[in-house]
Every structure is written in structure tokens, then in C-alpha cells.
Length: 118
Image (cartoon, rainbow, N blue to C red; front, side, top):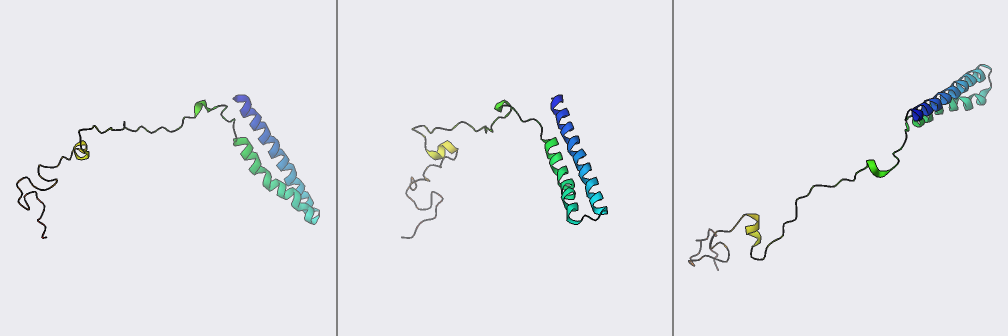
């Protein structure tokens, strides 16, 4: 790992050295009134720092997928409904006697449901 860091530092310092030379060249061209020729080293001196930083910060990539684990949610086990149970008893909301399908006594309204006028 230390050889990787030293290689990146060396590459960064070389690029900054080239930038310094380009900057000095741009200043000399400007002082000597060379016009548009001044733009080439100036643009190089402006653009090189971006690439130098990107290359210096781009470290060694992981060599394999051993460090990466895909997301696996922890879901509860799926509930299977047994043959003799209704959906309401599985959820814990069993209906009171007579609530489903009318009342046991046959009087309207005894199941808590208002009577229907037919």
C-alpha cells in the first residue's frame, strides 16, 4: 500500500512541476507580447491541477468482490394459512358470534348492524 501512495505522490509532484513550467512559460509569452501563443501554456496550467488531483486521489481499486456484500433484508418467515382457519382468525380479529351472515336469533339489528329496509 505504501508503494501505491508513493507512486501517486510522485505522479502528482511531476504534474505540478509541469504546471509550474507551463505557468512560467505563459508569463514569459505574455511579457514578450506573443499574443495567442500565451493561451496554450495558460490553458495547460489551468487544466493540469484538476487531472493531478483526480489521479492522486484515485487509489487502488478493490481486487475482488470479497469486500462487497449485497443487501439482504431480514424479512420474517412467510405465514402459511392452515386449512381450518379463516383469514380473520389468522389476523387475530375473530368475528363475534352472529356477526357474519346475519344474527343467530333472527332479529334485525341484534348483530350490531342496522336493519335494512327492503
